[in-house]
Length: 289
Image (cartoon, rainbow, N blue to C red; front, side):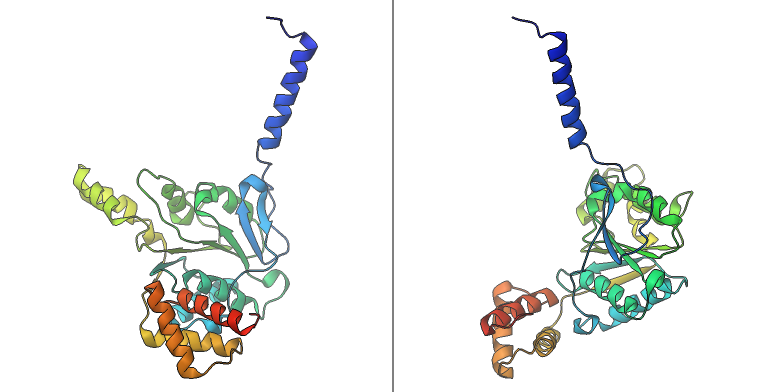
């Protein structure tokens, strides 16, 4: 077999090095953004990636969650004004407006705020929780205020990244920066599956301590806001609210009958189901929403 010459080997090594460099994530920028209202935290793409427009609905369109809406909005306003506020965990039934409420509260608070006084929404994906300390160090020195938001947060067996979140929220030596608040949504009240907690009880030498280690994560959230499956009246109120907001013209009884039929085919009644129904009606009527 013929051996490669020195120059040929060097060219191959150079191409390999260049390919690896292209595949490697770029360096994370150290400075917090000076402008912009919304970002997604993506360390592999340089850090905070700007979002031109937040996908969401106005706060007034969120029906059937009045108590949670008022509490979260007030907490968010206090934080934006530099007053004490709590991290919040929005937990419960799917499709009941948890993530929509976070985005709507951010938008409502910013309606009358200008410049550096505007609250910045930063979405962090579940997979990036381990890099949360890096993000917090980046934001700590900024004069702006940041609302960090993680949608559908939960942890499975053998997943230890929840420890990074615990330390970042309260327990770390640096502590949570005063200009940062953390909101999370989850289908689980304690962010852990029940079978995982039961297994810890069954196998641990000290069952109480083993479960406490995992349940204590949710204790880092000062606000627990529960979202439950809605009844028929609340569901129809959501449908009526959407129809009125977007100017959909349909006989009231017919609209309700079709909305109930739609929910029956989905096997659920929720804000998400109501929204999907309204999109179907709007498309049928040739109305853009």
